[in-house]
Image (cartoon, rainbow, N blue to C red; front, side, top):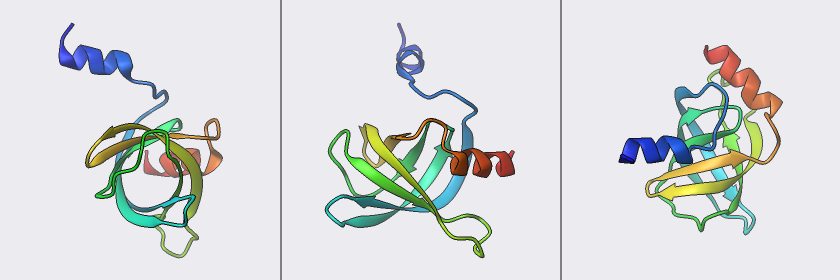
Length: 108
């Protein structure tokens, strides 16, 4: 089995995955936060580029700044499920969260 084939087999996300470039802020339980960029997203999770490394399965709050800056940032709870610095894969804690579904719908 080739590397690409193995990666696809290990893929946990479902739903349409969209390439995005959105500023996000990642917050962890200890009150720490860091700026990052969401690079792709689906209703089950996202790929985020971040200079800060977190331990696997770290619970996170992902604050997404909408493209329309007159709206409040979206707040989603997630956990890190993949780490390949500087990339981290997150899985949303809520099943198909409405805020991300609406955001992705706007971007289609």
